[in-house]
Image (tube, rainbow, N blue to C red):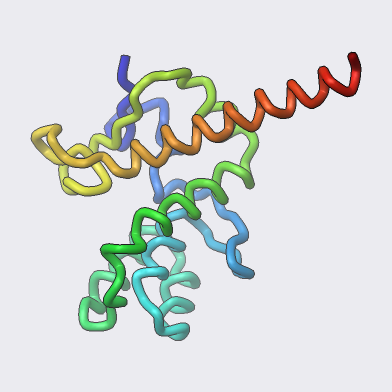
Length: 158
């Protein structure tokens, strides 16, 4: 079974980076994961602040796209780590999201974005689906942490 998000009528819209689930990370409040990820594309603190303070995720993405000349040179190297940091912080800040992610069990999670062949599956479904992979990685980490906490509790009780 696969779970697709970023589609019409979906049940997993909260998994999108644009969902309005804010969090604190690196000393700043981010309105969405998209705000954080788009800001991290730049090393200039002024540009990062402009993106962070934008009203909506769509605006944050638009601001970032308007400044290709200012992109950090190592973006292709750090982007996966940046996305992982955003996803972890988002889910840590919102327990109901964590529960929803865990409720997916072992299902494959796919960002069904026809526009993104890197973060999503692309229009033809053959994209890298890196956001889906990161969500599955975070889900596995959460499961591992729960199992470890349960084992610790059993040791203390027993």
